Image (cartoon, rainbow, N blue to C red; front, side, top):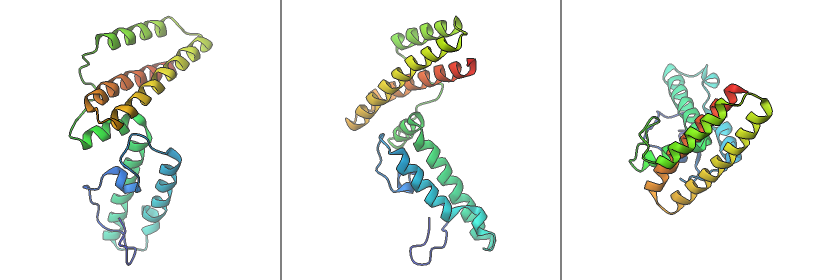
Length: 176
């Protein structure tokens, strides 16, 4: 992103993966505090507001690099988007609206949504949200194990599961 000798902002290189942008290992497990620190440090160097006295070309490089860092940060920050990105790096695209071949998961989600429809009290909604958080955390742990073990087909299945749990959480938050 920056010239090592003069510090000038370079043109955007889209072949550099998001993990390399921050100089962290390519892994499902990410230290979010370290990621945030590296993000802030990069933005201090790349943010377009700091380039007002530079040439138009350097300002454009800055805007491109800064936008890329923002995209990379938010992709790696969230477990679901991070997992999808890791799979994408392996050549596997998991559609956000992809078909799920797991009848047990579909039944579970249907039951959760039925419970959610019948509840309007804040206390009960918070209870459902806490239960969903446990399912989400368990799925994230299983995803970590799948990636560590190189089981990408299992990771795909778990990404789909996690996507459903995230949608459930969004529905609960809307009702709160």
